[in-house]
Structure formats: structure tokens, C-alpha cells
Length: 95
Image (cartoon, rainbow, N blue to C red; front, top):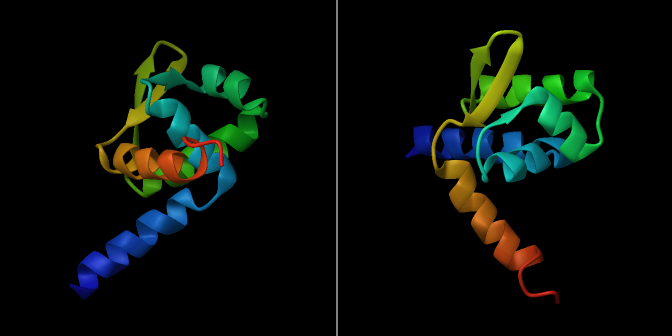
């Protein structure tokens, strides 16, 4: 149980940053290139890459290279499930 608690704590730390949370929100709808994420987030490439690196280290996203372009997608359904709850709590009802 302690191991699972540590894994959960690491997961929550990884998504607790606004930039990383927004990246995951965009990846819920499917794979995106770094350039697409820059545009969607109105952020610089260095900032997006830094947050993607942290998400990759935490095992939440996986990269795929196609030529010079790197695409990212969710590694599994955990972020999607959590983001659905967050959306329902904070965005869904317009409260």
C-alpha cells in the first residue's frame, strides 16, 4: 500500500503544475506534436519541452519521432480518467 501511495503522490505532483495539466488536457484528445502544443498553449518551445520532459520521466506521456517532428501521446488512461473528474468538478457545470 505504501508503494501505491508513493506512486499516486508522484502522479499528483506531476499533474499539479498548470502547464503540465494543460498539456495532458490537450493530449486527452489525441497525439500532438511539440509545435501543436506550443500553439495550443501559447507557450515557447523551451517551456513546453521542459514540461513534456517531466511528464515523460513520470511515465505519463510517450514520444514518437517522425522525421524531425516529435509527437506525444498519453502513456495510459490514468491522466484521462483524472482529467475527466477535474473537468466535471471545475469546468463542466459552469458554477
